View (cartoon, protein in one colour):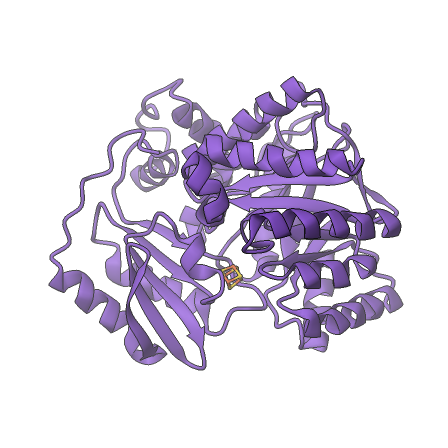
Length: 423
Ligand code: SF4
C-alpha cells in the first residue's frame, strides 16, 4: 500500500503529521479543563499510554488560563506531548488560545454563526497561528456541518468534502499550509466517501493536506472498537490518512491501544493486532464496506463478532445503531455508565438509532442520524430528543433512561428498516 503524499504539518518541535511521517495516534482528555490537576494527571497517563498528541476542550475564554497552566505543569514534568485546543462556538477563544498550544482544532460548522463573519475571523485566526507556529485542524463533522453548508450542498459526503475545500482555500488565500483536515461521521460509509471525495478534490487542486481519521461518536466496547477499525481501516488500506483517533465512550486511555494496533497493522512492516476484535475487523470490515465481499466465510469468527463487523460495515443490522460521544471536559454526567445501561436495556430492538451525548452544547447537533437522543444538560438534568427535536427537557438523570424507554414504547416505534448499504 502506497501512502498518499501529503504536505508535512509540524505540531510542536518534534512531531510531524503527513509528508510520509509515520501515522500519529492521538486522544482527548475528558476531564474538566478548569480542573487543572486532574487534567495534568490524565495527560500524563495518556502520554504514558502512547498518546503522541492530546486534545483538550477549551469551552470559553475563561478556560485559556487553565490550558496554559496544564501545559506549563506538563512541561515542568518533562512531558512534551503537543497540546491541541478543541474549539466550538467561539472564534474569540480560538484566537486567544492559539499562541499557547501546538495546534487548534476548529469546527467550520460552528466557528461563527454568520458565515461571512466566520471567514473574516478565520483569516485573523490564521495570522495568529502563523505568527506563533501553531498548526490548525479544520475538523468537520457530518452531524454539525452548519446550515451555511447544508443549505448549499445538503448533508452528504460530497457536502462535507466541498466545505473542507472552502476552508482549505481560505488557508491558501492566506498562504497558510500548516493545516490538517478531518471529515468525521458516525456512519462508516459516509465517513469513507467523504474522505475519498476530499482526496480527489485536493488532488485536482494540486495540494494535498494531511488527513486526521476518525469515526465520530463510535460508542464503546466491542461495537466502538470494531466500527472505528472498519471506518479508519477502509481508508488506511487505500493509503489515506496521516493521524488517527479512535473515539470510545470509555476512559481515553482505552483508545490508545486500539489506535496503536490499527496504526501498526498499516505500517511497513505490518504488525498483526493482538486483539482478536481488532484483527477481525481490520481483516474483514473494509472488504465488506467496499463490497468486495458480501459476507465473512462461515466458521472463521464467532457469530457475535461476525454480526458486529457486518453492522459496522453497514451490511446487516442486527441490533440498534448506537451513537455515543466519547465525552470531554464539557460532559456533565457519568456518560459511560449511562451509555452501557442504555445499550443493555435496548439491545433487543432493531432498526433504530439511539444517541447518548455528553453535553447540550454539541450533543444535539452531532447526533444527526439518531431517532432518539439522550443529552446531558448539566446540573443532573437530561433532555430527550426524537429525530433531532427535544421532546422532554430537564428530566432528573436518575429518571431519564426510564423516560426514554417509555417514550420509545409509547410510540410503538416503527421505522423503515435499514437497507443493506444505506448511507
Ligand atoms: S458532544 Fe460529547 S464529546 Fe462533544 S463536546 Fe459534548 S460532551 Fe464533548
